[in-house]
Length: 191
Image (cartoon, rainbow, N blue to C red; front, side, top):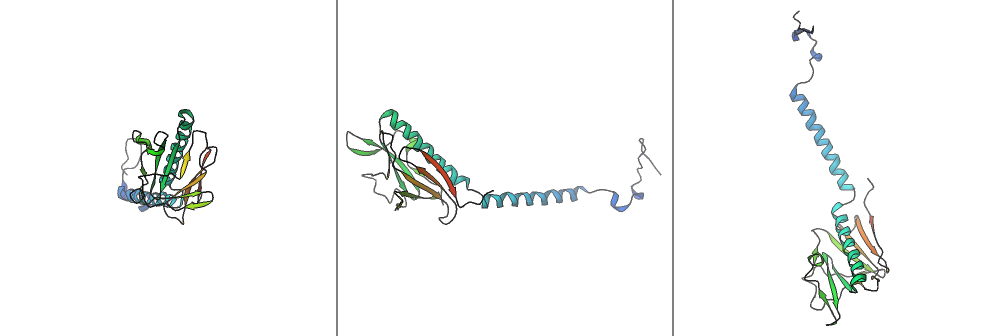
């Protein structure tokens, strides 16, 4: 029986059939199957877990409202937020013209449209506000924001809900009169 320099038999014909190991092709097939299973698990977790896109939109709105609340106190400005089903827009109150005006110089406060198919709902004083679909449909010549962020530190108490499908999970931004903001999620299965 031929042996190598370290004393291992090099005669493969004498090894039992199952003792040879796996071929490269067999290993590749196993790796592909494991990859498909891992991909399926990751996608199914995403389908039943919270929606990151909705969460990002609510956190964006929260950050802007919080920023404007602080700015209104420091700069003695009154801000307003106008909501539609597909987005929101910020205004500043012009005391010289006694009207709400757009914040044209600040791109951060410009009209923000949610990515399709996300939508919004607005609740003020425990009543749902009927929102226009978008700003094209809404008359913005004389804007009247639904939510005001006042220089006195007060904010119109509201709940802004962002969702993909109304009957399923959603994130809600809640603002209190003193400007305290909180985000909650509902309808998503726990991970």
